[in-house]
Amino acid sequence: MVLKVFFPSCCSSAESGILIGRWIPEQSSAVILAVVHFPFIPVQVKQYLREVQQVTKVSVSVLGSWNNSKQEKEESLSEFLEDLGTIFSHEPWIQISKEGDSKFWNCSTLQKQPDNHREEEIILVYYDQRKVMLSHLHPPSDTADLGAEDASKLSAIFNTVASSKVLFMTDRYDDGPIKMTHWQSDGIEASIIVELMKQASVPACMLLTFLLSLVSGVCNSRVLKFWPLSFLWSKLSTCEQLGHRLQHLQVISSSKKAQNQTQLMRKANIFVSLLIDVALGILLMSWLYRKNQIGHLADTLIPVADHVAEELQDLLQWLMGAPAGLKMNRALDQVLGRFFLYHIHLWISYIHLMSPFIEMILWYVGLSACLGLTVALCILSDIIALLTFHIYCFYVYGARLYCLKIYGLSSLWRLFRGKKWNVLRQRVDSCSYDLDQLFIGTLLFTILLFLLPTTALYYLVFTLLCLLVVIVQGLIHLLVDLIDSLPLYSIILRFCRSYRLAAGVKFRVLEQQDGKPLRLLMQLHPCRHPSLVLPLSMGTGELKQESRKLVTQESMGTGEQKTGHSSVGKRKIQLLKKQCLCACFYCLCLFCD
Image (cartoon, rainbow, N blue to C red; front, side):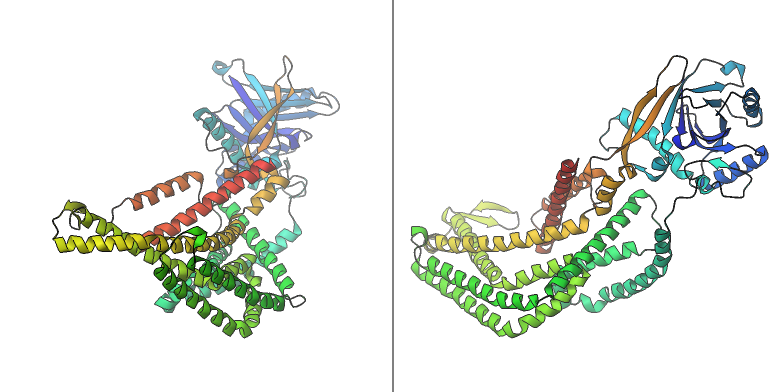
């Protein structure tokens, strides 16, 4: 039988006394938490341990004795420590002794029942109590069954130390009857600045919660659910980002305490991300209002819009000729070209009509940067959408015309073959047509077929232009999602205090000698996989599950409405963004490691 004793390294220089900790019979392990020094009264020690057990829900008891003979061996003290096993009934009774400044330690057990007396191999494991107390174990999710069992054993040790926080709140300066040595025995580790911030954050969170409740009440009012306002709220990226940040502020200012370490890390990541976002926004605002940068931007915006309009006019003139040597239908080409040129003329007139107010609009828009860099980026995305609205209109016109021609050609092709579409049975059936119907259908099919290349060319060109605008907006939104989802607090902990995010432990052999217990040093192994650090709302498995849901929704038949398709498309885009962010974080963590 192998007995594992986890001994805190901070107690190696403690005075002689008794060992307090938890016995885990399933693992044959003893987790030492503290050393109680002489003098003490056993009744008071038992009463104190009962109080600690009621608070921590951890079965804390006296596990054995600790003998630290700094100068010479004291046989009377050793005998007295052995006799303590009759007062504190624990099976087995662990005896650990350190002889002066020697590096050799003795560790043995006393069995009170003769039937249980057998040879035991003892492994003495040293651990840093402070790091284990402040760390949170993140075992890899793809471990095998044996690895998962080992992770659960380690979690029991980590949870024992973490749950005994009340035991570590007493130090040597207390006037109580019990004196102990643990990682905070020289004084409770705390920061005056952190404590002052905690005290000041209570009224600030209450005020922020009240203001957020008012804002959320206004946002959820029935006035904003009418068609024009609800349409603008769903289409503008700025409104969506403000709603997203409002949810973040509600999470941060919530009076509900975090239930576990994961929720605490999520709150900390959101808080740090919000602070950095606001700081970057203030820097951007200071740059905009320095040396009249807004005036320069307003003066540059009109020439850029005119240049884009001129390039579109040149492109349409090129399409109205013989683009790339293609022979187009001249009549349809001229009609489409003049139609789009007229829209560009209207757009240029609109831009020049708004030019006197652009500087004032940019001046007020620049003030919104104090809400964060992400809000400013979303406003930039909306400005790009407004400035390229004519390109989007061209794409819609071309797509609608192209779809109508494809639909007409498919119907006429069925007529040309003597077929028709059965709406009730959702299939193609045979049908007999009159000679006049076949003649007119064949004539219309020929006309639409020869007009299709001209329409397809306009559709292709404007689709590529709209795709270019969408790519620019997508890069902006990807940067916004990166700032929103980047776990800065976890990354800072990973580089500054890696033991706070432990993926496992490593054991290093300190001493291995015949007749002496094997001495090991337990070291925390920090996380390497980004899935343990990233506080994204979805993990990899959840992303796969969401992808399956989207595929299922798409395959539910042809009777789905257009609103359902648009919602599925929007969720696809959000899912793709999350997958891209996961890939970026994974590459970042691998590069840093």
